[in-house]
Amino acid sequence: MHNFDLSLDRITKVEGSASLEVRVKNNKVEHVHLKITEFKRFFTQSIEVKPIITAPQLLARICGTCSNAHLLCSIEACERALGIKPTAQTILLRLLTIYGLMIRDHALHLYLFVMPDIYNKDAFLDFDENDPEQHQLLHDAFAIKAAGNQLATIIAGRSIHAIHPTIGGFLHFPKQEEINKTIKQLQETRPAVLRLIKIFADLPWRFDRKTDYLAIVPERFGFLNGPIRTSYGETIPEEKFRDLLEHVVLPYSQASAYKHKERPYLVGALARLNLAKDKLHHKTQRDAADYLKLFPSTNIYHNNLAQAIEILHSIDDALEILTTTKFKPESLIKGSYKANVGVGVIEAPRGTLYHKIEIDDEGKIIKGEVIVPTGQNQVNMEEDIWKLVDELLPTHTKEEIVKEIEKLIRAYDPCMSCAAHFLKVNWQ
Amino acid sequence: MTKNTSMTKNTSTKKLKIGWFSFSCCEDNTIVMTELLNDYWQEWKKIFDFKHARVLKSKNEWDNFDIAFIEGAIASATQIEMVKKIRNCSKKLVAIGACAVQGLPAGQRNSFTPSQQAEIAFLLERFKALPKVLKVSEVVKVDIQVPGCPMDHKNFLQVVNNLIKELQNK
Image 1 (cartoon, each protein chain N blue to C red):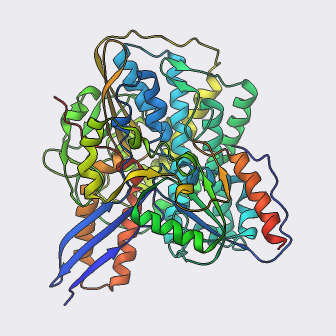
Image 2 (tube, each protein chain N blue to C red):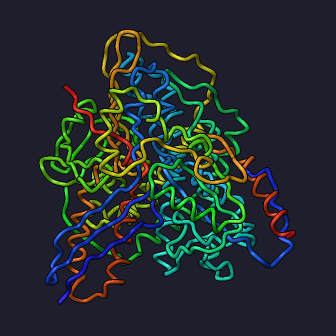
Image 3 (cartoon, rainbow over the protein chains, first blue to last red):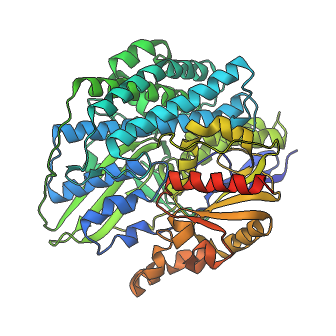
């Protein structure tokens, strides 16, 4: 008969700081508390009264790894508040910026965080260069990450806290020689991504729990624009996204959590592929056809596979844009100040990201609100852990259960840095 | 971020013991480090023994670090104790990034208006946060600072190169 309190002080190989507490009594789980332990940095308060132009760069500092997602989402919210419509070229440059992020960030997660669990290693850098298979993985990992980094750098200036994207357009435009170098690098990386997809498709890891999910479903699978679709079959315009979510206070966690229709739900790559695999680039659909048959999936470990497929899509669509577009300098589009509210919704690597900004008629910020993917996944993660532990209790030791819990949490690719830094705002 | 700096040749078989720690921040410097791995992972595998780096490994050890890198500002009494513990077992302590070096933007609540302070007070109390967020040098002696948001990777590599020379020649 199991009776114990299981405590993980700090979960490793994830972004940011979180701990977990599971209470088991008479072989049954009594509670699961996933505690996001990052200290709040109160970004939504700090932008108050500041000019709207300061919001995107400041809000990008919410998170190091997803900084360019926050930057693009905030720019979208600000442009809608100012009545700005970006040019066709700006939209393409933003797509390339998010593709650079997806390639870099998904590869970091899949190789450095998840791969050690597959090969029973403590760290990815412990992989053996003298073993041909592990040698290949080491080289693949850093080649893919470098390609994403290169793409983001030529388009956005930096892969972390980018400096070129701004309200109304871009401050710098890529040179053709940089584009040519990047095309070559992306093309050379593609076979490594196909190897990565196969690894995660062949992996026998399974944990199934039917849950709700939602994501932006654009015409061009590009993470930036389009209505929100849910697993209920609903289609909601971006500006109504906030109406979908119910805020849940978890007194043990520094982060805000959310439900939809009083039920937990999932966001992220798995949700995106469950809802929109037919929107992927045609080359991705061709070369990942066998693996795409696995979606829609209820297996949370297919979030890893979905991320690997999204890397391929990001490379394929980036190559199409880079090889068919001649970029030229454009002036920034100016908006007009009036009392208004703007909403930005994009797909960040870990799921749907929401920024809202309210300004006065001088362009000063009255209020801001940010809802991040990890906050939306938190209740779903807890329910998964609950079910997982209940299932494992009869046959597994406490140490084995801890290992399985960490694997499951990593499959969500949570970002605690994002999740913790807001105070709930009650919009009137 | 592209390779433009050669690492110092490893003249010794003894690896440098590294601690990598994150406090209150967005962890952008950790991401810079993981991006530098794209170019330097083979050299770093030979030179560095990452004893404590939660982003890279699960079995983290407290040891006598040759170099401890700290990113992030200090937001709680527990974090103060942790930074002191790191200082006591590190030959060199390097503060990286704006939050560690200047305390910002993690410490932007330090300059909130009284009404904003009142709005967040219950959360500071609930999670036992310090009344004022601190930069690392307000808590312990810092040997080297690498500013920037995120830190500049060329400056970081220069600091690392200099430390390798200094520590391996001892």
